[in-house]
Image (cartoon, rainbow, N blue to C red):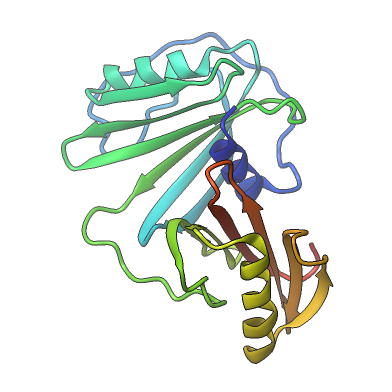
Length: 231
C-alpha cells in the first residue's frame, strides 16, 4: 500500500469505522456514470460519505468496505469501464491501488487501502467539482520556503491537512514553527528536541500537529494536521 493511501485513510477514517459483513454475488449495471460509480451489484458495503476540499476543489467522498478476498481494483476498473469511463489504475503488490476514472463532464479519483491493521479493504472514491480551484484559508501559517503538494479540508469535521516539500532542514522547520505558532496564539503541548521532527500545539478547541520528516534526497516533508482538540 502506498504511503499516500495510508495518509488519506488515516485522515478520513481515523479511529476505524468499519466492521465485517456478508456480501452477495456480483452483478454489474451499465449506463453513463453521471458523476458516480454504480455500485449496486458490487459485493461491498458503503461505510461513509463526507465532503472535502482537496487542493482547492470540493470533493464528494464515498468510502466502501470490502473483504480482502475481493479483487476490488479489478472490480472498480470493470464497472467504471462498463459505464463508459476511461480508467487508469496503478496497483500496489501489497493490495493498495490508486487511479482515475474519467468521462465527459466528470471524473473520479480512486484510492484502495489494504492495511493489515484494518478489518477490510477500504475503497475511497473522490468526485471533484469541475472548474477553477478555489483558494483555501489555512488555519495555521504554511512554511514560507516550501511547495504545497497536497491540501485537504474535511468540512464535516473541520479537519485540515496539508503536505509540503522544502529544501530546508527539519531543525529549520521546527524553529520557524516554534516562533510563528506562539505569534499566532498557539500554546505548545509537546515539542521534541530540534531534529525530533514532531510538535503539537493547541489554541482554543483546536489542536495542531506539525511533522517534519527528512527525505533521502535531502529535502524535508512538512505535514500540518489541524483538528478538534483531543487527539
